Image 1 (cartoon, helix red, strand yellow):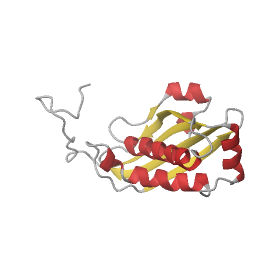
Image 2: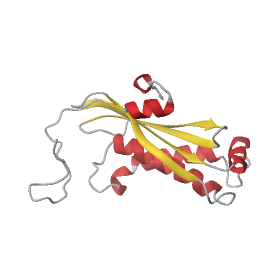
Image 3: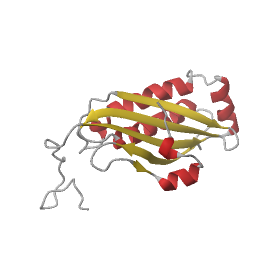
Length: 173
């Protein structure tokens, strides 16, 4: 498969989706932030001085997904029909896992929007908690699954093994 974001002379371009059919599309991405025990407990107990960390981070993640085309130069401006951010707390690892599910009926996919939503949500957690811990680590950001479009359903098998989850049936809506 050729790269689609380059013309015949190798210059970057936005892919023309004019002739593509609209289909229902969904993408789920995930990532995590590793924090200190102190930060983990403060998030759980709601004692971070800046407010409810996970509520603010969820809002930021939705905002990030909606503004993806302003951050990634060749992304299309998309009228998202839904975006949901969810968190799972992992006390053993002192980690917060973030999931972003994005939906649209359109001509192009929403993978970049889901990945951006996760990234912005995790960055917001870092921002809100950095007074307590500047050594937090954000990582393992990847696409879990996508549906719709010409390529149909794609499930990240490596992600399923890493998370020990059935990502084919992952429904975070």
